[in-house]
Amino acid sequence: MTKLAEGIMVDLESGDAKTIHPVRIPIKIDKNVAMPLKRTYVGMFPFDNMEIGDSFSIGAEHGAQIYQAMSHHHKRKGAKRFTTKKRLENNIWVYRCWRIE
Image (cartoon, rainbow, N blue to C red):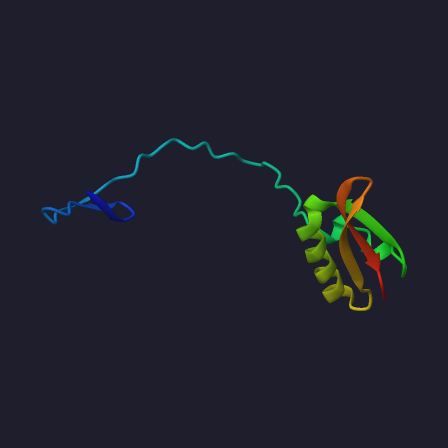
């Protein structure tokens, strides 16, 4: 038997097809569970409080988030620009972000 699509199996030797019914498991529906707030990386970094020449560092594992947040902040605010470099500080790899404009 070979699966062709969801719920359909075909016997390649005879060409017979049969419908397979998925196993149903009971799922409990919960009411009134608070949804977590949407996490944005823009609020995670202090871009709005920085003056030209200021910088901050963050662990290297947050590299993708900082680039995304810098781009988003520049698109929203326009005037402020930042640059980021990955560096070794105190034997730990970090991303350091500077405000340049």
